[in-house]
Amino acid sequence: DMSNAIVAQDELGRPFIIVRDQSSKTKSSGLEALRSHIQAARQVSDILRTSLGPRGLDKILVSPDGDINITNDGATILTEMQIDNQIAKLLVELSKSQDDEIGDGTTGVVILAGALLEQALKLIEMGIHPIKVANGYEKASKIISAHLDEIADEIFIDKEDLDSNLLASSDLFKAAKTSLGSKIVNKYHNQFAKMAVESVLKVADLDRDDVDFELIKLQGKLGGSISDSKTINGVCIDKDFSHPQMPKFINNAKIAILSCPFEPPKPKTKHKLEISNVEEFKSLQKYESDKFVQMIDSIKKSGANLVICQWGFDDEANSLLLANNLPAVRWVGGSDIESIAIATKGSIVSRFEDLSSEKLGHADKVYEVEFGTTRDKMIVVENEKSSTAAIGKTQVNTVTDLIRGSNKMIVDESIRSLHDSLCVVRNLIKNNKIVYGGGAVETSCSLKIMEEADKQKGIDQYAFRAFSQALDVIPMSLAENSGYNPIEELTKLKAAQVSTNSPHLGIDCLGSNNNDMKEMFVIETFIGKKQQLLLATQLTRMILKINNVIVSGKDQY
Ligand code: ADP
Image (cartoon, rainbow, N blue to C red; front, side, top):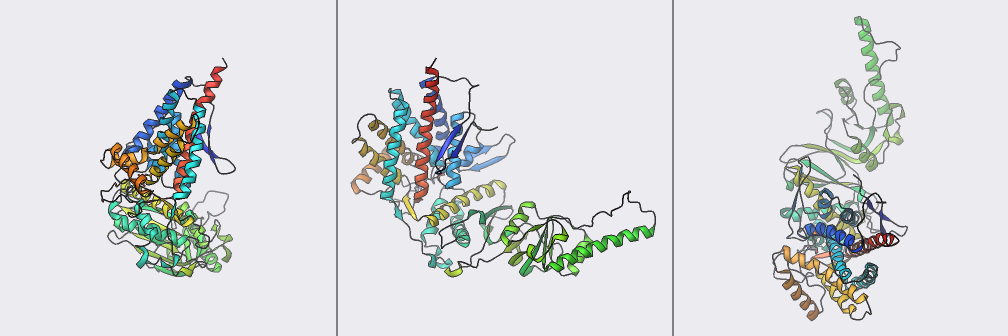
């Protein structure tokens, strides 16, 4: 079931929306169509409003085949909802593009877009042309974007200080912890925040302030408790060595990565293999064991000291491997094989004849780990990074965050939460600018654009005020979800921001008697907030214009 609308990017990386021809569908006209579009968008964004923030409600999603999923993640809620309306589907795409680029703020972006549309509709009902609203919105969003530059703050990332003793007091750690605030893993905030910071720092290229997300693997494994989750240096495979007597720890591993089965090819006879006497049977046996010896030989000759095999092998092969001091792992899945090849810079070899020393992967250590309560075993392939080790921490070329939990629902939601937190840390390493959350930044922008409205001539002043009111939806939703009266809280908040001239004040969702978000360290990344604003405004303008195209098409008749 393909959506009729997709978000694409132009050559400058600006997102735009492609809507496929819907000519077979009946079109309603003008205002009526727009009203129903906006109605559909509102329904979606209203659902998400109740999950915003640390006091937001989790959603229980039940799929058609009965799978249950509990989540607080906007992108996930939208993906699992059965949405037929084309405009509502655009909001799903909106959330996804925020997720792809930033990884956080996926709920907020949809709520903001929904509010922008709702406010636009009010103007259109008053007789203002949708294009004029769209243009006014664009102007407003440019002013807000400039205002964000003004009020942005920076956090301090001291690369030297990030050893485990000081980690908990670092800004990165606090930011990671805040981003977990609304998620299911509440009890494990410290542990997950630590995992997020460590994972990113271990693979980050700190000279270039860059993080390749491909190098962080998120892996769930049922069993144990969430507190058994941990960050492992390297690729982690859910297997054990093929023979209990093989060594459990290999230093300086040279790995033959095989996608060919460890079994002799069938003898090349034109006829069906028929064994009618003992001699024939013995010769077949000899043929097979000769082949095994040849295979082991080619592995040995290549210089490998570890075999990772996509397929299985029988006891005979297994004992030969053991006898030849070749620890081996069998039945390693295709994607694990690929991860190992990438992490060890080896090639996947599909024929024993092709094995050579250049094809081998290299790992500093390969070892088996055992998990506390469950005694489950996994194998870790670990490589240290040579380049940026200067910061005094071990850097590795891949990390795996292994998430444990007693059921799939918890494991899945924990993975999503950690993912968001990883994104925040990554974004901060790329750009250490921040704004303050809890609705503080939206309130400041709302006040700014209201002030600017008075300076506008014509229709723009209406569009600016509408934009200002749309921004209010964020602090209001946060207040409402925390059990406060939204209008009262918003009024108080605005008055406080004006009188103290501080863009740090927001909604005290957690009842900590402090609404200074800077003091509470409730932050959002600057690039995330900018992206939310950009995407929400663009989508709104697009929807207002889609309608206009339909109207003008009809007008010709
Ligand atoms: P999203 O998917 O958009 O990130 P969340 O459900 O994570 O949505 O909620 C994010 C919102 O909650 C942001 O406006 C953020 O500033 C706010 N928020 C997060 N933690 C707190 C807190 N401790 N106090 C007040 N607001 C918070």
